[in-house]
Image (cartoon, rainbow, N blue to C red; front, side, top):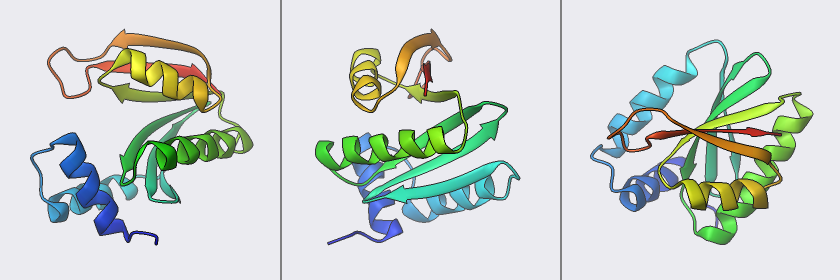
Length: 130
């Protein structure tokens, strides 16, 4: 059974141990989606919020499911990014090794990481070729 958007967000908040309410998270999403280059797509119980910047898509993943659904969703998103003509996907991450494995399993290539903001929840910026 597919979750509704608020259930996906609630699971994501719980799993990431974020200090924010579902309502506050939804308001933040709505604010981002008002930007002209921002879009959100869904694959199963995973939401992909992304902004286009030239040939790159900067992505934030809102995961409401387990590992199998997450990998399936990321593979589908990479295919969509390819169809939309993006050459790169950028994403802030916490765990470099896990992010590399997931990116590779999802079909991304030449995955690199740079320190984005030390001490942040997601301190590394991952850049990968689509």
